[in-house]
Each structure stands twice: as structure tokens, then as C-alpha cells.
Image (cartoon, rainbow, N blue to C red; front, side, top):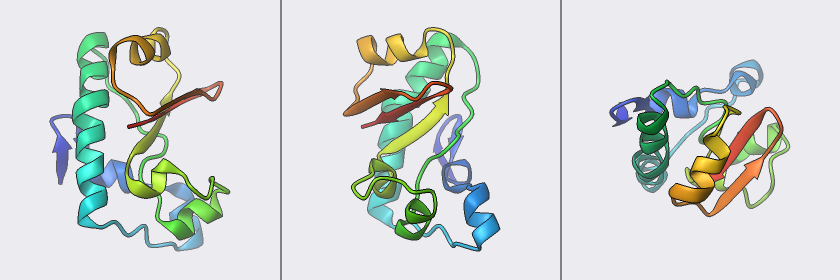
Length: 115
């Protein structure tokens, strides 16, 4: 299922940890709607501006998966409102200055952005 022109539900649900621990990363309709908003308002404009594909390191996490990766109890990932993407020159500043976000965290080798 496409969430936007360049992002799919499958890539937002993928997790090596979930596969390894046999966790079914279940998502509901409201959480899918949140992912659509995140993709259309943040990821697509970022991709369009820089003209390069964006790999999703971590997207949606069900509660069990979030616990398995030791995510915060109130993580926006569990609501379909956050994504972690690789650090890329200029991306952090562009998101900060031009795109809507609720959280924007420089995690060193990746960027956490929530809407």
C-alpha cells in the first residue's frame, strides 16, 4: 500500500527486530492516517527538495516492538507519527527551517522526526 508517491506502508512497518523476535507489527487505520500525513507533509517535500531517495530506518512500532527496542513509553512511533531516517547533509536544517514537525532530534547517525 502506498502512503505517498515514494513511501509504502510496508517500509514503514518493517523491522529487523520484529522479524527476529517474531513480533507482529500491527497497525490500525488512525495510525495509517498519521503515517500518510507524515509522508506527505515531511518526507515527500524533503525528498523532492534534495532529489534523493530516503531510507526508513524505523517507522511505525506497535507497543510490543517499541518495548523490544527500548523505545520511550510515549514514543510517537507507536502512533504512526514518527520516523527515523539516515543523517544526510542539510536534511536536519531543512526540516527544522521548512517542514512541520513536533519533534526533531539529531541522533548522530540518524534523524528522528515526528509530526
